[in-house]
Image (tube, rainbow, N blue to C red; front, side, top):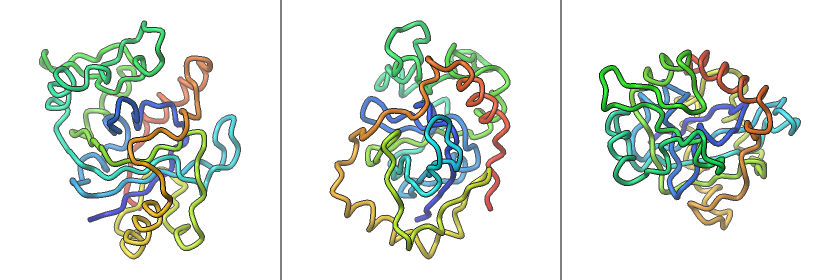
Amino acid sequence: MKLYSYTIPYDDGAAPNPFWGVCTLTICKPRIRRTASEGDWIVATGSKNAKDQGDLSNKVIYAMKVTKKMTLQQYDEYCRKHLKKKIPKWNNKDPKLRLGDCIYDYSTDPPTQREGVHKEGNRPTDLGGKYSLLSNHFYYFGDNPINLPNNLLQIVHQTQGHKSNANDRYKEQFIEWIESLGKTPRTLYGEPGLNIFNNPEGHNLCTKYRASDQDIEC
């Protein structure tokens, strides 16, 4: 089992997408999506300069145990049958439906990009991850992030990329800590910290950042 940790500079509700009872990481973080296995944990802390929220660098935005891993094509097929609300409906009034991360339609070859939070410039990073990671055992705090205890501050990774091997000595401590909080898995304890529909500039920042994210392990 591995513990992956990274900084999420723009928590817009798309990557991860914590809605509809399943937390999914399908766009962004291509290396994590390629290498993580079922049973691994992923945790994201906030940025030192989170837009509109200040310093969130030692606070947990979300944590998920990977309970299913599938190719992006399998994810598209799965969403059509079981997670239809993860397929973006860009003109819907419900922001959660607009934020769907099942962006690529594999009924065509090559896959067509559905209208959603990403643009064609995001395609290499999105498809480069090859897989979607799903979790039915996750904790999403969003704009109500929680402080990491002092003994776990070493897992914080503030630059682009992520940590995994460096977290080996902390992974059991992290799981013990987060599951001792008395929080109910699959419950949303906050909303996305950045509302991209009220903030077009924020939307552009998210899109550009994720397009350039090489997700190097540090």
